[in-house]
Amino acid sequence: MTCSLIITTYNWPNALKLTLQSILYQTVMPNEIIIADDGSTKETKDILDNFKLSYPKLNIIHSWQEDKGFRAAKSRNKAIAISKSEYIILIDGDIILNEYFIEDHIKSAESGYFIQGQRVLLDRYLTQNMLKIEHLDKKFLPRILPNKNIIRSTILSKLFSRKTKSLKGIKSCNISFFRKDCIAVNGFNEDFIGWGREDSEFVVRLYNYGVKRINLRFKAIIYHLYHRENSRKMLEKNDEILKNSIKLSLNKCDNGIQKYIGKQNEY
Image 1: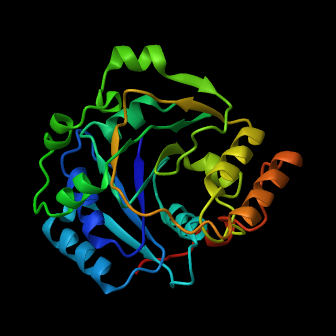
Image 2 (image 1 turned 90 degrees about the vertical axis):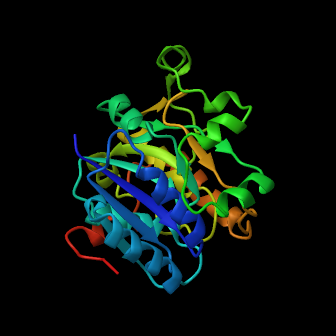
Image 3 (image 1 turned 30 degrees about the vertical axis):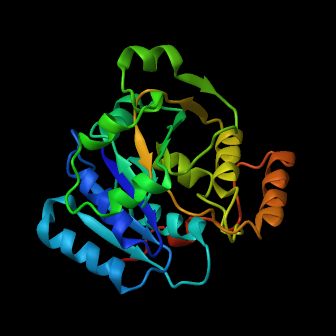
């Protein structure tokens, strides 16, 4: 099964560099890496150009849009629209991947389901130290973090992973789904501007379309770098969009991915 890894980013090139370095250690490589860039400046492009030059087999594509505020839904839609793989894995550009991350998502994929992974939150001090690292050591994090979520275990994963239709714990920093299912519900709703709820509303429409959730535990491990919380000023409006989709049992949105299908969008 072909797989596209889509990484959302905005003006944090040092974090994105760590994310890209962690991809180098993957036991299974994605067919393409698409950077869903919400308007970053030249520093991010320079990081990506250097990686393209150093690691041409990574197949990095830079999908960029003008900076007009927090528009994660739009940047993800544009990236998914130009993807060429059957399966999509979404992460953020401030994530460090366990070496089995891609393999775990692909092997756990199941028709009629999307996968919601967990995350390990790094504190401010550890994040500052990580950002100083020039070359990432894939064995570094598990040695220093006393956290059960760093454990990767096939046995524990079978015991604690669940199939569900809950909205609790939806996080687009570690989620995967079949591309055809995403397009069927018209992708992410671009009526969401500012932080919050665009990922939960996307999942609501997947549920209403008939796609269920695999809550994957003890596999597909990620380490999330510390950062300040995003502004919540649009949260009330975004909550209303989410509530409306739930109330009307919507399985499609009007302002979604369809308008980008078949169009090129590379920086």
